[in-house]
Amino acid sequence: MTSRETITGHTAGEIADSVRMLLERGMLRADDALPPVRALADELGVNRNTVVAAYRLLAQAGIVVARGRGGTRIADVAPIAAEGVAADTVLRDVGSGNPDPTRIPDPTPLLPGVTGRPVLYGEPVIDRGLAVWARDWFAADADAAGDGTDAHLTITGGAVDAVERLLAQALTRDDAVALEDPCFLASIHTVRLAGYRALPVPVDAEGMTVAGLEAALEAGARAVVVTPRAQNPTGASLSAERAAALRRVLAPHPYVLVIEDDHFSLLSTQPYRSIIGPGHRRWARVRSVSKFLGPDMCLAVTASDPTTAERMSLRLGSGTTWVSHLLQRLTHALVTDDAAAATIAAAGAHYAARNAAFAERLSIGGLPCTAGDGLSLWIEVPGPARAVADALMRRGWLARTGDEFRLTADEPSRHLRLTVHDLDDDEADALSRDLLAAALTPSRKV
Image (cartoon, rainbow, N blue to C red; front, top):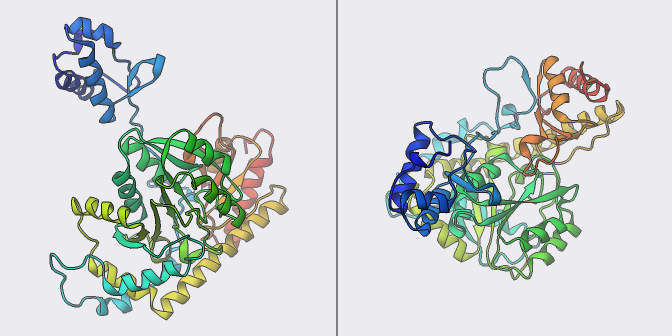
């Protein structure tokens, strides 16, 4: 809807409110063009700068987007795909990205020991025992993670919460963020919802690419979010050579915020390799417990430079001031318990073995596949992945295509992300047969 007569107002605020009202009433929809600045200013009898200011207010609120010669248009608020089990389906879900619940340590025996004295307002926000353990955890990778001697700890309600707060304390709407492409779904959602500009950095078998990061920095990236190992969805982990090359690229940009999301941490079969150099000034390393203690344990530990930590604490202070000390104590109890540690180690070995076995099934059947690190497999297929996923659906499987993880969509994805570690041998055999038939049959109508 583009009729100038429906937009009213004489100030920037009034004009912006008028557009909001039209959108709420359904008179404007996604991708509708707003009138050109000059035309609307003449129609309303106001200065052009007033209309420019109104459109800027709408852009800052994420209501409109500027598309150059395409004009100013109502933003598309289409929902973004999310991780997790698909609801209301009779299909076997092999796209969830979830850990195996039978491989998560049972907290029940440890619960009585974490109650203790209630924590009151004004007391330290980080449990002392968890802080000591976390410092040792990060210190174990100090050689790989640059100069961590001044690292400050922050506890948040999970890795996604940490990344959101880290970006918010450093960026404003329309700032650019370098993201891996393909990318973790929650990172795409965080950047898009906050109004930042995502700059795609391709990922290959050794992780984030050097040329891609160089291009993003040249395009004005003010933050970089990278996964050092078990990149989701590809399973790629940084090689030593790649990490060193990325550190060299970042060296001239010490104030670009670098966030390392080490989500797989204790479960990973790969060493931790950092792109944060010794002289970098703005950095953070985020480690969540959700993969090895379960998604319901919403806790992540962030080690960062002092300035970033201070700004992040201010962001926490304006909302959820601290993460429950009961949750912190339970986390500490689990990660320092011998039985829980053995369960975590066995889980990491299980995920690696099951993924490798399934990849071997596919390779033997004529579809080359290499298992990376992480909970899922990233499988390249000869044609558009959507057609393969549709064929699998007809066989009773719900798969996730690579299209959902991409920042650039020049052409259909040729990848599937499958979560297969919880399949028994018979189920894995059945899925591999169906996938081979779907991917290697010319018409893919199987």
